[in-house]
Length: 150
Image 1 (cartoon, rainbow, N blue to C red):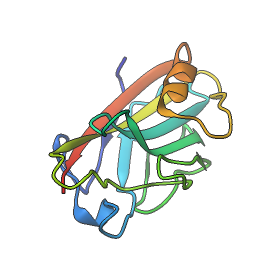
Image 2 (image 1 turned 90 degrees about the vertical axis):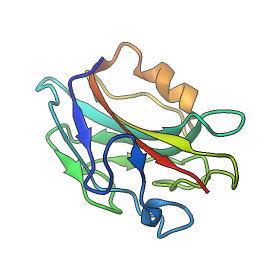
Image 3 (image 1 turned 180 degrees about the vertical axis):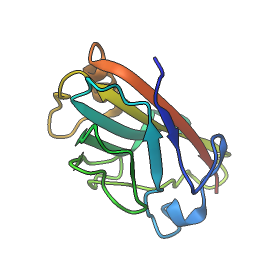
Image 4 (image 1 turned 90 degrees about the horizontal axis):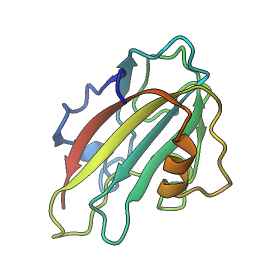
């Protein structure tokens, strides 16, 4: 599934995420812009996940209920109308890249989904819960990948 163009002025697709957006920097979420959201979308969902984390995919950011009429989010902000959920660090909102030192380069997949209906989640969803809930509700999606290592 595709259709949404997702980009950032902070880094290009498949390039390094600046330190200011990492957990060892200022830990600010990167600015993002998007286009191509279908008119019939009822909400957008934004997530950032690290599939290279030891053990399991690590959730860095999950925001649901984003107004489908928006076209982006400023640095350090939550998208308009959105609800920030706990990340893998246990805090609601953005949790910047912090791969284990010496673990090599990690990939951070920023994904934006346009949904046909609201996403039903319990209070502390994991990455797998989110992906299960997305099934059958996706109208379109877009992906931006950043990298980071320590």
